Length: 416
Ligand code: EPZ
Image (cartoon, rainbow, N blue to C red):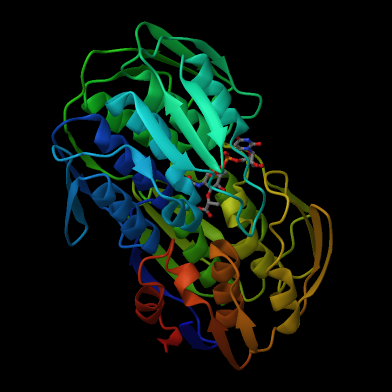
């Protein structure tokens, strides 16, 4: 496993243009298969998860060409409707291909995606929405076999505003016979970005970003060109890294309006923030203040994906912060690595009590999943001494070239 070696204590200050959003580009790449033609995606981040999704597209018979941050997908050669087990197990977010492949081919076969370190990750809401649209679903031998002679419009209600289930329902409904409504839909900005791309392909989607999405089925979609939205979680991670080290940072190419809950907490912790149209300028105090309680919630609440980096931030703040993780059942597992660095954290189920300490110490730590790994980077940058962080491949799933951006902001960091 690759490592990041970080000598902590340097102020993280400078200027970063934030990458495109992983959680927008993945469903949008899946959506390209619904048109028999070529789509061009700009501001596409260079991530392991994007590479894996490109591989799924190629296994389906599509051509994928990357040039810098532009990815071109030509789906005219698509000749398969199955996603094999190894790819599904490696990248569970491929489940969102289900709705897209069914729309294109009238059938799809994927292996059960399985869980991941942060939780069981069931897909019952995905399958319920697809079956309400008229998709016949057989689950056998660990595979999900879907077929639909004709997908018809339906009034879908999601028991929980699941991001993936909302996306799968949208992808399966865009060419359905009739009108579909999705109520209690996920409201994340990435859902809006997907709907913008789908409408540019010729779909008729209204209300994305609200809790009821209406989709009028159309006969056919065509390829389209789209610029991926900025990654709000990566942006907040860099704000946390700078705030943890008392730095001053400017983020460009961001959308501050997507980040209200995270910026609110940062302000409560004592940073000064100035937001412009596509820019955020942050100045951090010598030492942050704790926030009483942080609860993760579906958008527009505090995002679960930034919980781990903010636990690292709270671990050196003055005072105690209580985190309640309401979205995933196992998202505090990087806490024991933070404790190795001197953090004072007690977890009990979905709650973590973080008592701020004056200083963390560098140590040998291991990343076990993407955002926990990012949390250890934030801690290592603030720690006194050197940290050897193994499992950097997990961080590469969601952060493009993390050491390059941090180096440019004064970090002493290298990849081994
Ligand atoms: C998306 O995952 C993101 N991934 C996650 O980001 C993010 O944490 C999550 O949304 C919540 O915002 C991508 O977009 C690729 P959910 P998803 O369906 O769609 C339960 C990261 O670090 N649920 O909204 O899988 C589920 O168990 C990743 O970038 C069901 O019960 O999340 C969880 O408790 C991690 N049944 C909750 O809903 C279902 O059928 C939220 O899941 C589906 C979900």
